[in-house]
Length: 216
Image (tube, rainbow, N blue to C red):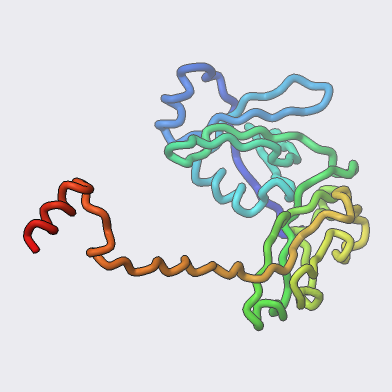
């Protein structure tokens, strides 16, 4: 886990249609969910939230302070405006520092890919895996060596990952992380036969043929 990611929030009274005005002020409505307790509506400064989300994603804990009360949370859901591509709502889930949690962690391929040196390429069906660990033990990312990616059909799976101590893999071991493929060869279109204009029948058919015969 990297350094603690800290975010300040304030309780929110605004709901429904009035949320548009809140967003116009540079604030993002959010909700904190905690097992066995009522959810808490909060609002967070937009830029501070964007920075925290960029660092934490959905795989690192966020220390959320709401008017002097602190919550250890994980970001579980982020809604964005499909047109403006801006965050419009976030769901935080409060967690216990002493209880393991499940989180999605990015996977990075380390080193040069042998297959790419001979013109092949790799496809990434999955670039994240789900792991389980105490919040403080969640890795920022996992790495796997590219050495096995040599020939078309070679692949890396979640089973190839070396997990840190106290981190459990939840994703299926067979989950494919990368596979080697050959570039597709584009077939050239067949050349069409050249046709002499004299061989093309006239739209007027036999009438034109008769006229040509008389002219001779």
